[in-house]
Image 1: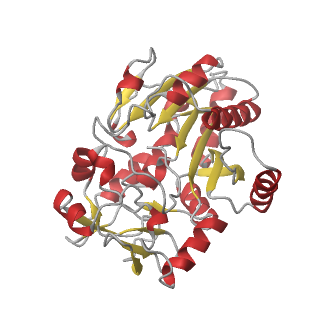
Image 2 (image 1 turned 135 degrees about the vertical axis):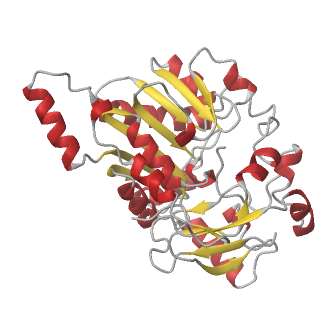
Length: 356
């Protein structure tokens, strides 16, 4: 699922599902003909449309919190069948040799995980794709596991626990993890708040939820948005990648989302993905500027579980009785509350995920 903001001259992958991104409005509508409208998962209000992209997708914004998302959007059944199927990952992406850019990115993330955890542990990679990160992390001494809406062949070849489906629907059999990783995945999910709330429940004590998403408020996306707004781009708003991406985050909206899910932000940054080969002095200077000003096109959040009053009291009681600190299975869970709120009746044309 990993992807970044796309430039207008990028070559499309040869797979038929990926050709939908970049195809004409007519081609997309013939392949994806079942849509649903969406409300803001944080505020439960009807969004306001601010743009229509070159393929006819409506880009919307919550008038209360400014979270941006696609509405109406293809149903999960349509996306699973036509986009995230067994051909989603091309052979080039499934190659055993890891690109230098990926090694740099993965190494940077693992280094931060190890710093926050004070050592190595277990990682659940949500949206594990072809298994590239799983293989790399395993080679670095981490214990790994992965999920995806459809597991690719490269991931299936891994000798580690794997699950297929949406995170909040998977039964992990009581397993807990030191890191739950969403790398360029959250923007593809049906409900990012539910995904984050579920990840919170899967953490060991002191564990980390890592979220990396495209930064819609980055310098390059802002410039491309201005070009689109003034009709200076042939394919307007293409950088939103609206077919694959259902949600579009800024620092503020992502922070609200993780806090609503019961997490707190330990650290955030906007890394520039390193390209293969030598970088020129100008490129290194530009990278340093983007990372220093936190205006790059990638937004990385390192989060930790925000304990509720009941959890804190329960842990204190357990310690008083000499019980293990790891007995979090008995702690108060917010996920049942979220799932209950999700069932609250809504307008038949408006899917409201949940609201607090």
